[in-house]
Image 1: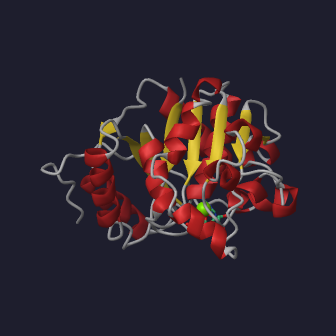
Image 2: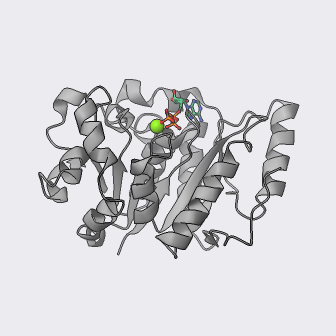
Image 3: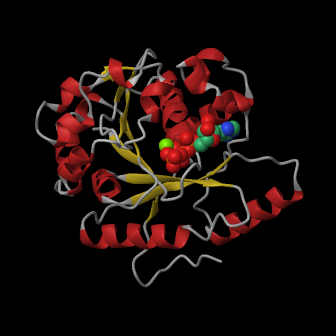
Length: 269
Ligand SMILES: Nc1ncnc2c1ncn2[C@@H]1O[C@H](COP(=O)(O)OP(=O)(O)OP(=O)(O)O)[C@@H](O)[C@H]1O
Ligand SMILES: [Mg+2]
């Protein structure tokens, strides 16, 4: 049965979608059947595979509204072993958003239960907020990947997010674990980046992936090509680091860290 991994952080622009698309393609290229579910109303996953909103006939909204069985919202990405469910929660359609706002918090978990056997990994690309959609993802998930952009205040926003994961673990999802925190957009040419990395690794001891994702222009070109980076430049730094991350996840060192209980707070400094 597939492992459900939510890629989440309430901070915007830290690399959640880039990680979902390119880690997904790397897991698929290692032979793992992978599904990526986009629950972010921004809909960036679809553009990463060359789809416009007009190409999408069914998506996660239909699943949330019980209008379609989840299987019918699955689209091929164009990469072997890799499917996706696009969002069609367009942000300008307030009525739809309201409906999602009142959806049950276990809706996504229940729906994914029906297709988990078809995949080895199900990745969920979360929106940059702590609303009902993110709750749904954290309750559906077995584990979490939290991208952190390497900047000085990176850890500041993390406190609230760690607290939310603890609440979800205690109230709704006792087995929730971290797969790891992922350092993204790393530019090792600056001293500041090195200091920030040290601080993050010290604070989140043992919970940060060894693999770091460098700042790499090819990763930003994914929506332009409408393909994961592995499909148009497999040797660039961006592609090789997401491939390394996939190997770290499926390899012997792909450890899990339980979400801390209330009395085992991760100190964010
Ligand atoms: N390693 C990288 N190198 C260069 N550009 C990157 C890298 N990772 C992400 N980007 C670019 O940074 C921007 C933000 O990335 P992305 O959309 O993946 O973040 P996000 O966390 O999903 O954002 P949001 O919170 O809005 O959903 C995008 O323009 C993306 O192309
Ligand atoms: Mg995103």
